[in-house]
Length: 199
Image (cartoon, rainbow, N blue to C red):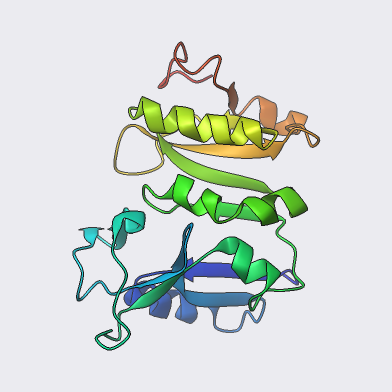
């Protein structure tokens, strides 16, 4: 209960909900925004932003909002590197991250390379196993950063191809207690991997 938990959320109504949940939990910090490879403003009221229920999709494809026409729903896209190295989270270290950014996971990681290399956290990313080229790019990125991916064998969203990868730095192997709950995945095994029967 003493570690800081940062929640980054682009939808204002979700921010308000999280703030209500976090009331009385001073270690929870909520930032109305998003994470990506480059700093910019997005205004869902002024730009075409893909939506699904309570989520905004593929934010990395959205254009930048003008300084003069932003609505109250506008939010800033932050680089994780900037938040930790020069921004409001400077002095903190990243121990764990859950990156569920609806299709923009690779874009987020491109803005987080320095902090991930510095802190070597365990983190999760959502992937779609039916989008093989994107999945291969994710695995290539993880392997280049000396990370090992483990698949959680359950659907993690509305799309039946959605899976979570738990990513461990190679110097911190998967704990034995978790090995029976997940299956390793890498570039050399992904094409033959039987999703849906991971274990």
